[in-house]
Length: 330
Image: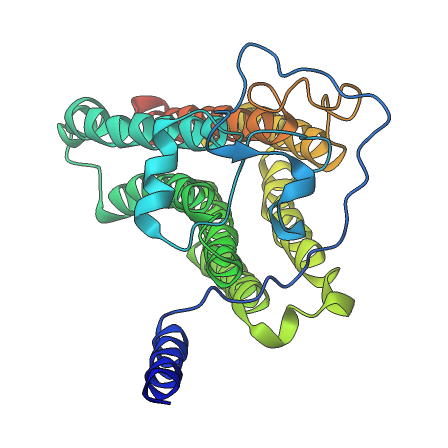
């Protein structure tokens, strides 16, 4: 009898201990995944055999269509997420592409401070506005790349943390869009402050709407999934309005010099190309499994976003130099 009572108390203690310990949250979506009829071995490298798994062994929110292997398991630990960057997995390329982009743009901020701005300051014509739009753009790019890096690093923590970091990633994209618009508005409408303020107010308002759509839990329901891409596209499209206005008012040649028009066109072309690759899962849709670690559409998208941001930076530098040169003085 004493033995039975002791066993009963021991079981109760174990139950209480298990209930008190933190439990992994339930996975929101565990739908079965059907593998493509033909899968290829990963190109160049494969995910770590001990620490990674395949697409049919992870929850749906971690799955990337046509990426078959190299998935990290849910770890419920930020330390484990950071440790996953020490071995090869299918997020390694996504992290490295935007982490390196972050370092490069941080270096551009330093070189801009020591090379570009002092040269313009010598005639005494550079103003706080120049600093604001130049460093505002560089900061917006750094924020975007940093939040993207953090999302891809911590996306395997848990479902709730995945969603939270994904929202941060969306906000980072909006910050880069906002930062990209400001230099063109500042230099394009420098002599028309009312128009400049009007377009800036429009962009900031759309930015606020985009942030609300990205982070509001009430707007994350499945039947509203269409809303975020529509808002993002509308914000990006709205940026073409002041550009066309400037072209109509001043002509293509003047716009090319004063707002870096050709650089803007190059930037937009790179963004569109990256978005199309990402949206249509090119090239991995044609060779499932081959680009699991290197060369998939998400990595190509990251690279094209970096080159687009870099192209726009050189356009801003051109506009800056022209506005502070003798050619721009009437």
